[in-house]
Length: 196
Image (cartoon, rainbow, N blue to C red; front, side, top):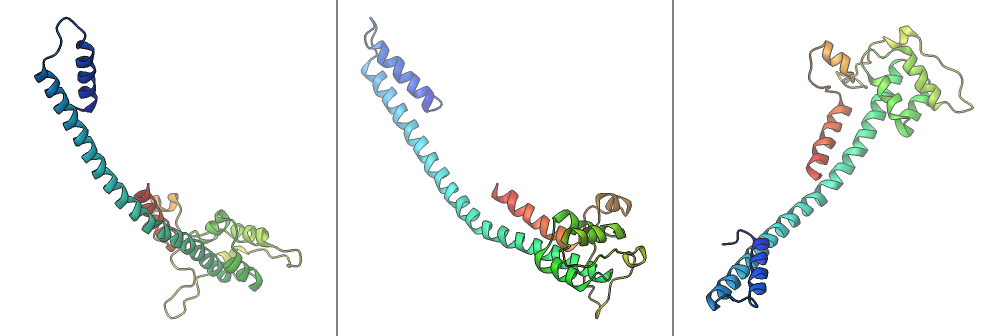
């Protein structure tokens, strides 16, 4: 007995070829071949309908998840810009630079470098230079400003939990960074993996 439609088709083809041979198939052989072929076509059609139903469910779930991922990407950008602006405020950068970081942003690498725990003064200066418009005065972050503590307003730090690099995580024996940006990134990765 054929195990699948392909084998049933091969058996039917052999049966048709053998009709003109000296030993043609019997009516029972043809009937059995027809039943096998019909059964396998029916089973494949049933499997296809089931898969189509599963695909529709997945398609619906993907349509539900895509707007969530889009919202999280906006949240990622907003969180990163707000954290960077908080850290630029902490190091006493000019107000126009803080506003520019918060509302216009900069390259992700430059923003991430200033929200990283113990970011050196050079990172803040580099971000300022990346943003710098022609009419902005020169500004350089001092080493003393880079180590200023975050301003604590009723227990709420403007920069939130600082980002930790892989080296810092290893040093502190932590498995993942708990900053707001990385938390949003993990949600995006989880939903993107579900979509894929």
